[in-house]
Amino acid sequence: MSEAMLANEMQTIPLAGSSIQDIPLDNIRESSTNPRRLFDESQLRELAANIQLHGVLQAILVRPSPDGADGMYELVAGARRFRASKLAGKNTIPAAVRNLTDAQAQELRLIENLQRSNIHEMDEGIGYRSLIDLRPDFYTVETIAAQVAKSPSYVKGRISLTELIRAAQTAFYDGRLSVAHALEIARLQPRDQERAFMECFPGHRSTGSILKDRKVEALTVRQLREWIERELHLDLRNAPFDTEDANLLPAAGACSACPKRTGNNPLLFPEIKNRSLCTNPVCHQAKIQAFIQLRVGPLVREGKQPVQISESPSWQVRTKAANTLYEGQYRRAERGGECPHTQVAVLVDCRKAGTVMHICVGEKCKIHRQFSRYEISPQERDQRRKTALAVRIQKESRLRILQVVRQKLPSALARADFEMVALDYFRRLGHDNHHRVFRVYGGREEDQDFVGWEFSRTRKFGAGSHPNHESCRPQPLHGDVRAYRGPLLPRLQFRRGASKEANLMRTAVRYKVDASKIITRVSAELSFKRSGARNKPGRSSSGGEHQTAKAS
Image 1 (cartoon, helix red, strand yellow):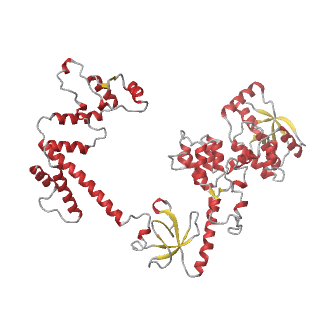
Image 2: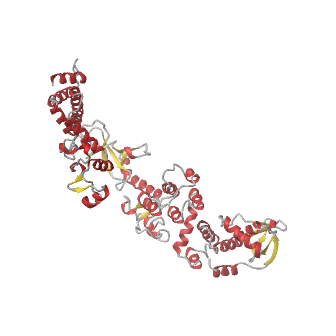
Image 3: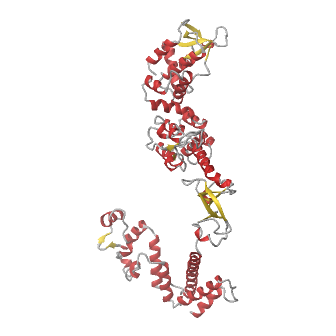
């Protein structure tokens, strides 16, 4: 607040009876209407130390106590100097005494506080709003902005902070919310403010838990703004009703003239480019309901009772209306009378709210079942059963082939088995252990010395690539290993993407196990079970495995 503003306002307040005198601190009481709520303790202690050295350089402003108590005064301006003098141990303080009415005292109190550079943004907004409430004919957003050398949008934003819900105000005072967060939330309706406040602090179930958490951190202002525009703001261009109709909801009027429309309040929404956003979801929903009633009225007069339906899937809606059917609970019909279950319905949400259509509510209706987006066709259902059966046959067949092969294994593994196990184990080691293995066996990668994982990866394969160690040729270096008969790991030359099925089938061939016969038997058994027939004695899985083993 500029000094010119303070001087101008002083001229409107009578100065008669003004005098400066030392008044005992015990005879002065602070006013409950002081807009300053937050006092920095460290700054008060600094001011107290300065008062101990130099005294109070500027007198405070008081008026005789409104209750008429003799010798008592009410503090009008100078709360920080008053409190710091108490901290400094002073008994008296210089004060200017004036006879002021309640309105005059409040006005001076507001003006004096708004001059302070360290005033909290919330207190600043309270001060601006109080000035407008005191003298609406003199103080406006524009006049205050001109006198404090700020933009009108700045003053409007500070005033909007006074509309914050209590939890957000507490978090703002405590520093959990920045002024940018508070401005984004303050522009919303109270119910949406609570949602936005909870969205700022993910992982908390209530506002109380947020205020108790001293280490809580809010989302960025950009994330909060994007969430608000996505979840709360409603684009009037998508409204099902006529936004120019002032008679749809007379209490609200036309949307084109509503102050809750972003385009009609540029001081409060300066950064939002879309000028057709509605920031009052309650009013928007009320207009949708009024529009629906206009569309349903003629049907009711004809004796029809339309069913309310929603396009939201039933499994995604948390709070369901008792008289509304959701997507998945009905099927659309082309016209009335298509089946015995056809009814008239009206959409109650989305851009098509108010649209009258016909639906079928029969769960087993053969006519409209095929039109459901969430039910698969009989052909697709049969194909899924076939796929599931094929998977079961594959798993059971592999298990039985493995069991038969295990019965034929000798006491010592053959070289081919050992190489397969070694290669499989090698693939599970990881790149660091690959490097160690090749150091032991003196491996080279296509005639290039293997000098390290990082060097080899970046020089030969490029950053982010993975060398194929299985293609490397280990060279025995130590004398004790020279008896080793050829390379161990890469001998089988398996493809890098070789499946477990290929390994199993190679092993089955090596041990003369008739895999195709086992697969045929498993397929017959599982297909027979699928048809609903009971298993006959001796046809169990274990019995079939032993019979197959004997036959092999």
